[in-house]
Length: 425
Image (cartoon, rainbow, N blue to C red; front, side):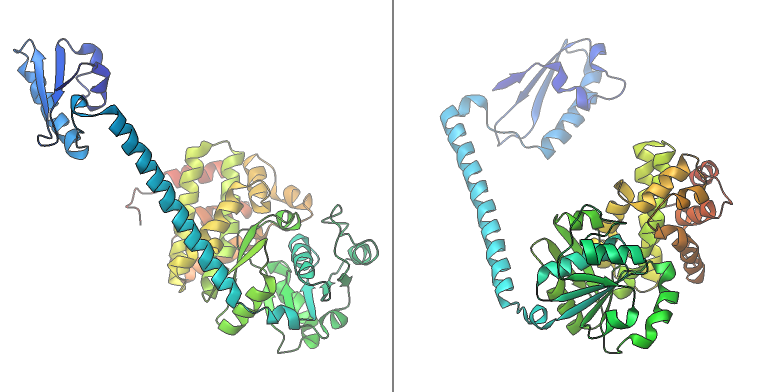
């Protein structure tokens, strides 16, 4: 029968009024074999019955959760060690078997995938010469050396740099581009004969841009909007492992795009939830500005966690009202993209927020950037959708007000912290 006399063992289950250093008496604890799963308590002197009332129910509850092992005297150390070793061996074996099954399933699945889409694709056009358009153009060009990849850009200097030096002098001056990647400023020649079109023009310029090229677009040409999943162009250029989502209601098309883009370093998940992917992709940019503001104001990690959690709820409320699927919002284009955009310094939207939170003017921030932070233009449109679908979005609405220079970050924090205390939904 074992006796435990170490007082610290009991400290986690003492009540607030019975701190260990106030304990005036000797305490003996005993526990029996598996057949009797309760402690025996004796307190010396015995007149301190009030301590028994305090401790006995606590100990009984603890033992109910954690059944005691056999008495020490009944255990053979060698047998205990052998049993522990066998348990570890069995666990390692179970993990190995699970991994081997996963690998076999993966190889079997890949063996059934036909590369016919990549084989028959002769030309891909990329609309836009920015960082992500360039990164995707490079990725596609690397998939097949015989394929022509043509970028439609508006900057003649960038066009010349790509064609003559195989560098994008504005966005990737240190990354050499593949020989089968070329650029042009002529929409007609870029689109002529293309099998796929990757659209990488910033959202706020998309309408006017598409109007300018509509006369040269084959109605049958598949357009792929690069809303993507959690990914930064610089890491794609560095050939680091990346995952994205391609969404379409056309199952045949989505499978073709998956075959075209999937490689050893780029994983493409498919989805039929176009609304969910688009809404999550747009709203996370606004939330990233909010996260940056928290960082810029040095409000701490607690504030950051609370704000991003609230923002995720707001995105979910609106997206579901618009018909999005819950699985989409917790996948790559939802939670994945939010994590990347809100917490990583490479995020342009987060950078805008950090500088706003530090006290800079929005005009000065935007004029100093050579890339577009889409959350700035998206914020107002998001609030219009929230009003249309009758969804309250306090965090994202506050960002829109700050961007419109109608609310300071400090005032926004005070208002958000003063919102009614409600049940979490």
